[in-house]
Every structure is written in C-alpha cells, then in structure tokens.
Image (tube, rainbow, N blue to C red; front, top):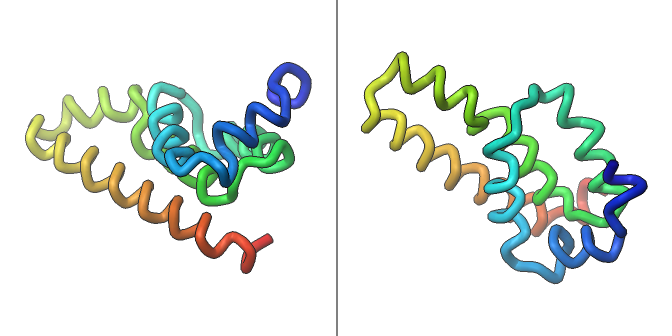
Length: 110
C-alpha cells in the first residue's frame, strides 16, 4: 500500500527532515496499530525507501510494539491506572528522545 498509493513527496513532507514534528507524529500514529515487530518491519522498510528519516521510523516501530492499544488494554487489567499513566508517559518521552537522537546521527547509520 505504501509503495503504490502514498506518494514519495508526501512521505518526505510528513516524515522527512523538513518536518520537526515527524517523530512525534510517527509515535502518535503507531499507538492505535495492532502489530508485532515482525509485522512492522515491511512498513518501516517502505517508509525508509520513500524518504522518512531513520529516527522517525524507529519511533513508529517502538510505538507500535510498546504503546499499542491492545497492549495497553491488557496492561490496564494487570496494573493500577496511575502506574499505567506513568508507563505511557515514560515510554512516550523515551521513544521521542530516541527518535530525535537517531535523526540527529542518521548519517552515521545509513
């Protein structure tokens, strides 16, 4: 779907280097998705080839696997709401920091 339907210019504009909020947007977009890490790898590869930054893709992948709605629903049954809120806040901040860090040093990895 990403290869054929979403134009490369749109991916570059939204998730590329010109948008300073790309990491935050990718993190937010990853939360409602229900997938494991192996299901996200083809999406990440397509986004990388379309021009998204590495840290932005990494943030998306981490949000999908860590903060997906099904995971949060299961955690809600196991832990108290205050602890769940703390978990979500710490993970979200950590994911965003890692994403911006990888974007900053992307030239070393690719």
